Length: 73
Image 1 (cartoon, rainbow, N blue to C red):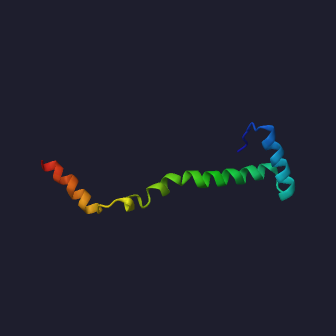
Image 2: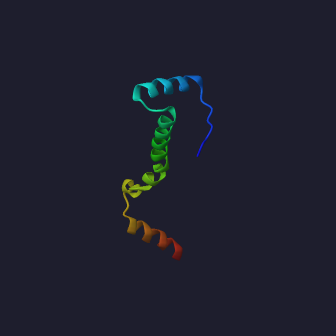
Image 3: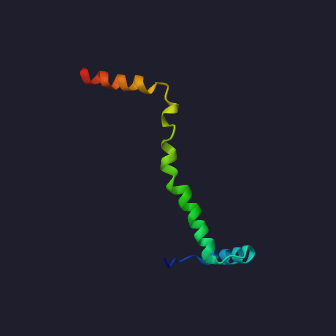
């Protein structure tokens, strides 16, 4: 898919320098940068929930029983 993106002149110049140094097109550099960005940001929410309960002093089952006890009151 072709996409048009407006970039500041500083970023265009930096891409040009990096492109020449790495022997890659600016388009390829942008594809790689976007891949890294998406990989790190799309998985952020998934990782933030992993091990969420580990900071709690209370065991999960005890907490569940405490909540259910309130239902009967």
